[in-house]
Length: 203
Image (cartoon, rainbow, N blue to C red; front, side, top):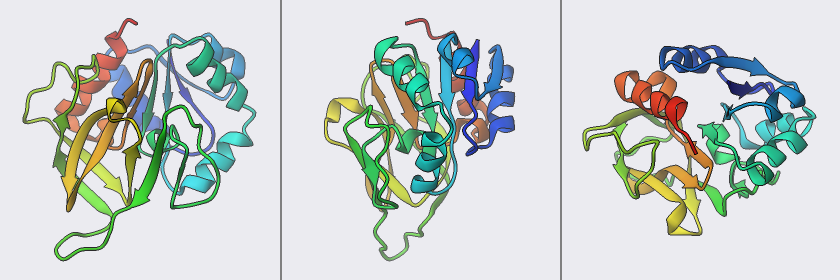
């Protein structure tokens, strides 16, 4: 069972629909016991960093998801804001993130011809082997909507990069913890392939 964490921030229906299409058994939950019994967790999220973290910290789920990821070491996938909050914080706010990955988020700098937010389709470049992306060809493209970019202190945590004015980290992995800045649930066949890889991943 894959549990999508419902902490009040995220497009839960589109994520759950794509996971089911990928062959996953899925439920949406805000119950700590259901979260701790899951085979995998998906951490969605859209919107402002501080709001997301305040909602998560106020949900009563923080202890359960910390234990799930850091002690039980079961697979977790964060999407968009759900990926950004895996790190230590963001220029978008002052509330600390989960701190599972040594990472910080910075706003894209304005430059000629480059719009912020970064919105639309973009090609990614895989930077290390991973079950999440190993089946992807070099043509893999995903859908992005964001104004802040992830930056890892340890290059070994960078799973994939993309370019929008500057090269930036668009996917991360540290052990059992995965995060994608892009939206696989909006990314058609490549998004479906990524979700299928997550569904079928066996640690």
